Length: 492
Image (cartoon, rainbow, N blue to C red; front, side, top):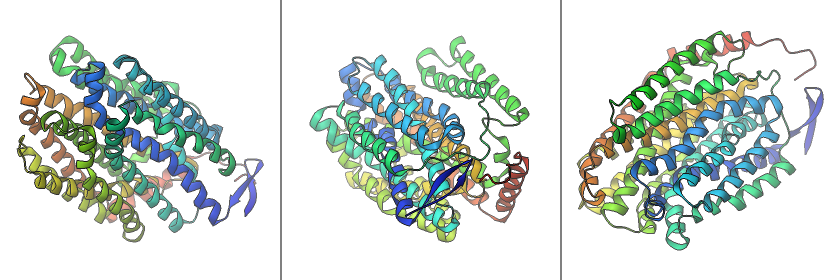
C-alpha cells in the first residue's frame, strides 16, 4: 500500500515494505549495468586492440574516458537530482546511458568509441548516486536502511566481479561489440519500471548549481589522467606533460579555495571533517584502484602472454567473481551488525596476500597459483564495498544524501581511472618490443602498485573506524545540519 505524506507542498507516496523492496530492486538494476560496464570492457581490450588497431594508451583511454567523465559529473548529478527530482534525473540517466551503449556498439574507430564511452558516462553519472539517494530517502529506519545499503554494496561488488566473465562469453560468441548490447534491454526495462513504481522526491533545501566548481573538478581529473596516461609516450619531462600536471595542481588549489568560500558548494569540504567519511573516500580510491589495475593487467596477461581466448580469460576469473558474489552480501550484513572495521581490515589483508605472488609472475606461473590469488582477491574486494557505502552515507543529513553518495561514487570512479592510468603507464614504460615477450616482467611494478593499494585499505580501515573517528563524524554532521538554512514550517 501507499501512504501519502506532504513533501515540498505536494503529496508523495510513502511506500510499504513491498514497495520499498521493489524500489531497491529497480535501483539495483541500474547499478548492475553500470557496474558491469565498468569491468566488462576489460576482457574485450585485446579484441578492440586488434580490430581498431589501438595502442596501449588507446586501451587505457577506452577505460578511462568512461570513468573520468563519470567521476567528474557524479557530484553534480547528485545535487541536481536533489534539486529537480530524483526520479526524473534517474530516468534521464537511464535513457542517455542506454543510447550511449547503442552508439558504442556501432563505433567505427577507436576515437569514436572513446567519444561514445563519454556519452555513456554522462548517463551513468545520473544513476548510481541518484539511486543511492532514492534508497536512503525510501528506507528511513536506520537498521532497514543499513540492510538496504548492504544489498546495494553487494550488487556493486557482484556486477564489477561478473563483468570479465560475462564479457568473455559475449566477446567469444558475438564479438566485442556485444558487450554493449547487454545494457540496452536492462536499461529500457529500468526506465519503464521507474516510471511505474518509483515515487518522485527532492531535498528540502537543494543547493544551487556550481558551474565553476564543476569545471574545476573536470580540469583536475582530466589534466591529471591525461598526464599519467600520455607520460610514457611523450616523456615525463616534456613541456606538454609538465603543463598538464601543473594545470591539475592549479585547478585543485583553485577548487579547494573556491569551494571553501561558497555557502552551498558543489564539493562540501565540511564532509571531510568526518574521519570515517574521509577514510571511506580514500579507501574507495585505493580499493577500486586495486580492482581496475588488477583487471587491466590480468586481462592482458591471460590473453596476450598465455594466449587464452576472451572466453577462457573470463572463465579464469570465475573464482574471483564467485568469492565476490558470496562475500559481498555477507560484508553488508557484517557492516549492519558489527560496523565497518572488521570488513575493511579483512579486505586489506586479502588484497595484499593475494597480489603479492603476482609481483613474481612469469609466463608459466602454475594455474593453481593464479586461482588461489583470484580467490583471495575476490574475497578482499567482496568485503570492501559495503563499508565504503555505509560509512559515506551514515550520519549525514538526509537532505544531502545525493551529494554524500555522489562523493562516495566519485571516489570509486577516481580510483578506477587512476588505477588504469597509473598501473598502465608504469607497465608501458617497461614494455620494449612485442607485448607477449615483455609484458610479464614489465607488469611486476604494476602489481606492486596494487599491493600498495591493499596496504592503504588496511591502514585507513584501522585508523578511521575507532571512537575518535566516530566523534569526528558526529561533529561533522552537527556542523552540516547547523549550517543548513531553516526549512519552512509544514514542509518535510
